[in-house]
Amino acid sequence: MIMFQFTCLGASYQLAKVDASVFVVNGVAVDLLRFVTCLGVSIDQQLTYTFADHIRSLACRCFFWIRELLSVRRTLTIDH
Image 1 (cartoon, rainbow, N blue to C red):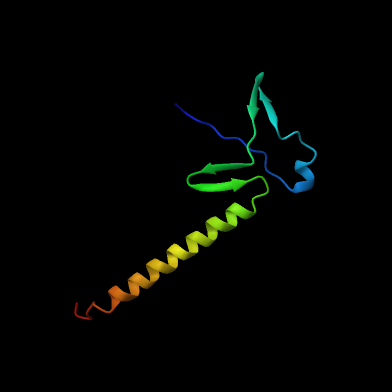
Image 2: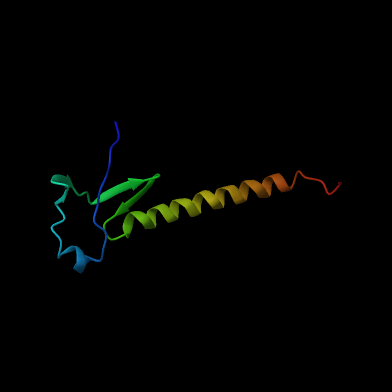
């Protein structure tokens, strides 16, 4: 079963102009969510808090792997 998630993105003053509870597409009412997840990234309507968390998590993982590379580098020789 395919599950779709929909949200409305924009600044807070723009979102205030839109009825963000229900969206109608081809006569079918679609619920709009405050948060959606796409490829493991949680996105909120204003692209703020959850996106900042994703960037922080990504930076931590990158720093971890850089430290791992430094430990491997010590075991390598210069011989070709």
